Image (cartoon, rainbow, N blue to C red; front, side, top):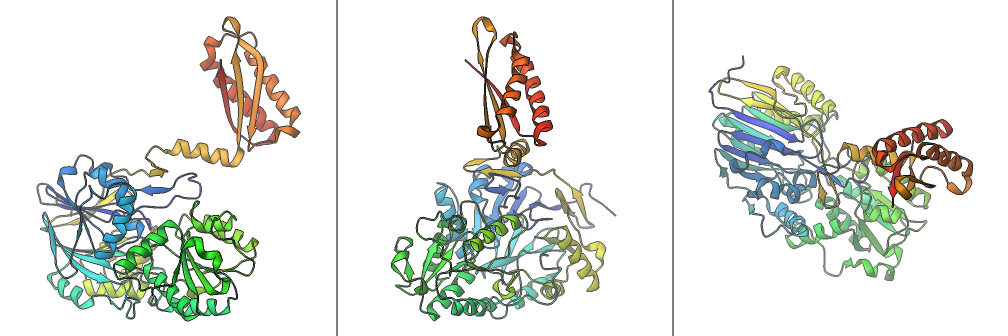
Length: 554
């Protein structure tokens, strides 16, 4: 039974990361205090043409900025911290609490945007709790595909919450730091009212393999390679990059890093002691061609097929430092996330057509080990924490439903698993826990340096242009306020004008019949009529609907 009234309330509201894998941002609100956990970005769908990234909609927070006590980041993957440069100014630059590696990665990103001096990055100590208003955070180390990943035991006036974003139990991690199980088990003895748990692996049986399995797969592929070797992975996946470097050393290859993101992240990780690269091993991009192909490994950015990434430029034959050769091997060590499957597939196809042997997870299952726990890991977490309620996060609706089924099989009441749809949050009082629709969320697109001005209408126009092209009609103002009897036509991406005289002339005749003898003063209404008649005419002739744009000059 719901009992809100004047009771104190804890609100947990995902503005991203619930019902989706990326764009993680969770709002914790109690009284006058708000804390944000994670500030991640998302990746555009294939039909969202020209969009670089997608960031969370923070409209809910705009009239609450003075109540935000801080932002707490779980780990250094961009879907958990990548929106900081875009949202920190909007949020009034609250302090950001980060682990050592995340601080280094975030500093680079903020510096790129000229925001480092304004940002307040506070590095927490893993063994020291910290308080933000009515919230006290106790970090506990988890395993993921990047070092310095943490979950949080959060003390609130309503009860204790465990926020366990991306995690798995890895007993032999690359960095040697295992999941702090005993610490978590001790903390949860105080009782836990709600567990927010990663659910992306809820459809996979067993336990997720250790990251160390990746190195063996790399060794097998590199040992067989007689020429160029390229390895691509998520640029912040420091553990994976370390294993690639280890394999390069084993087979007597030097290493080159291509792509700004992978170069900067590896530099940060090496400076902070998270990446071990011996002196003299790294080759600068401009020196690549001075080394034999069989004496070099190139770690290259673009595992998600990002349009301007180094890997895509390599596949298109447009990379300045290196050209793909027919005996090359390209190893993908990152499974594409929802939204990028098509563009990753397109890159693989281009690489294959160039004669490369491309190795990816569909044909070699050991090339990617998930950073997310499978059913065994999720069950272990639930059994350790044993909360009264669950909120599955970081997965799509099917993963959330599979998580509910898994908790039910463990003996938990399935009604206590709260699957949140977009805009829904959870309200906790001393007497009740229930979900509620709290906000309507929109995608906020980043296109170059512009934020939020790429709306659905613009995306529809871009989609139309990509599919059917554009048909431009240019008219000129004549004497005495009437139209000049001359029509210019430009077609791009629709028909090739040099061989489409008949169609072009018919289109011109249609326009002339509309403007002949008419006054320019009625242009607004006339333009709409011309656009519609042309669109219908072109569809009848070609069964395609290009974007029709009629312009008046002079």
